[in-house]
Length: 399
Image (cartoon, rainbow, N blue to C red):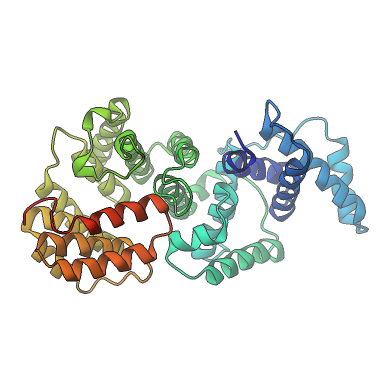
């Protein structure tokens, strides 16, 4: 495993562990970054446990930094670190360092958009451009959100601590958002390999931890089900040569049946609670996709109608249009996209291109494909769109 892969896999864990040890998120992040820089200089090959090496080195870097500080508080922090025999064990409902850090960053004193941007940066190790593409906003906006969030944590003296039991539900929505975005970045990475299995696995692991912590929260179960049912399809998502394969063309025998069974069971548990929420409905859509040899598109459309009533976002409208095309045809779906506005999001012109191609409007389809290709940052997706563009004279399905 190279250093870049280790960084992606270990960064979030190391920052979370150091934040617990140091009680300072900024110092933890800086120390971990220093440790990775040291690894780049010193490693000829990775040690047996690279994460432990990074944590130890980062802790030593933090001690060195505190030694250089002259304030009383810094000297006290240095003494605590130097004489600590065992890492402090915090008593509370959250036992996982990374899950604890998520809840800390989702403190209500922080602005909602800043909470999510900061947590994805710290836990997923995502860079500002990757987060900006996930949010569909400018890089400068994301950078400012992260800086403001860190300043707020410092100025307000927000502690790195486990939220009390009664605080957990209020912290839940941004936590779910963070895990959802982490998984999505892993499943459709904005740069590099299309799929980052490490990020997908970590999001699922944390979702399982959250479900164990809050087993009576339907949206927690819904998110876990959604991630499992999406992950179940991953083995068929890329073809033998590494090209992207659409859901309709995937070999369903490659899907992970154990994850599908588990996901369906979670969806049924959600249905019994009869408290539908956006993640539960998305999980139900995933369950329909993975139930049987073919997708029941009318059922999918009905679920998207329900989802749009709860969360009338442009992303939901775009995904709903795909189901509309399968039920009512591409012309109706194209009309449904008229008022959808997603600046900079390549999947909107890509979907329009598919619909235009199915209607035989090749010239317009080429222009839409060109727009999607220009907006796509992942080379696997870009190659797929280029291939689709060259196939315009041979539509995949008749309209």
